[in-house]
Image 1 (cartoon, rainbow, N blue to C red):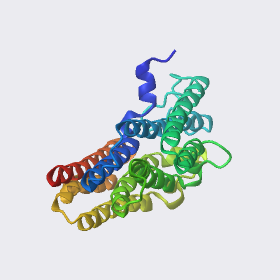
Image 2 (image 1 turned 120 degrees about the vertical axis):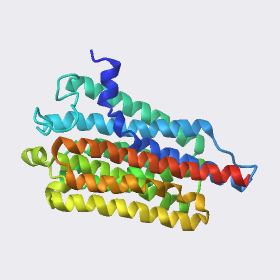
Image 3 (image 1 turned 90 degrees about the horizontal axis):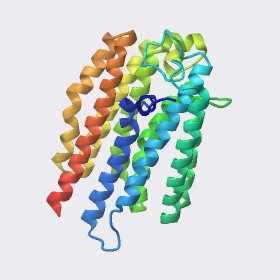
Image 4 (image 1 turned 180 degrees about the vertical axis):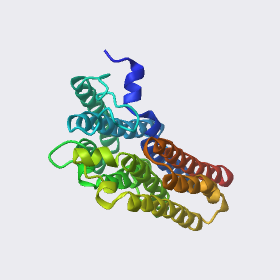
Length: 305
């Protein structure tokens, strides 16, 4: 029986910022707006905040577990893999054990999601949650897996950036915010780059297994260029937020520019297993950027109250 530590490793904790940071940013933005509105009829709900975060983590864990199963079954994860070890491929966790774990995590995530739907009486939340879980499965499984068609990047941009952040904000406030939308874009671009580095590193094994990821389709050089373009778009979006919020404190996320520049240089310079450092660095970039945006929101909330 796999240990707790082995299950934690299988969930890929180093990449968890892709689901945690967007939700925390959405919560910070909601707290900022609720507190500054001074409307006694609305208040920040800490229970739904925790449940939303758990749902976000659950969706990513399901995605990772399903990916572990089907990349092994389709011959993508083998001994010549350059990335971190995969639990199923290494025989640490059996396919059946991983399937049971996937069902358990998906069920718990759905139950938590149902609480949000019942409490808020909003079926848009239910639809978003069900679609997210369905695509988490369809990312590497099913008759037309997204990652094997080269459109997994679009899924990550939409769901691990825009939907996660704006959906979280909507759960707390019940409204849409243009400012929050622009705040969510950098996280979506960085999350897409996390996947991009992973796929650039695995081009060789993916080609042999018939996994047509975006780098396989457009070539490594173009995929690297896309990484740089998305990084630039992230900071451009951040600049838009700065002007929309009309407060210099929202320039704080731009302090991550040196790290973003370094990652763009490294992805050109490094190859093979060396790209694992760029993968972790990109996840850190997303984390630092998101945290500084949260600090900007909380700082302005405290200063203006």
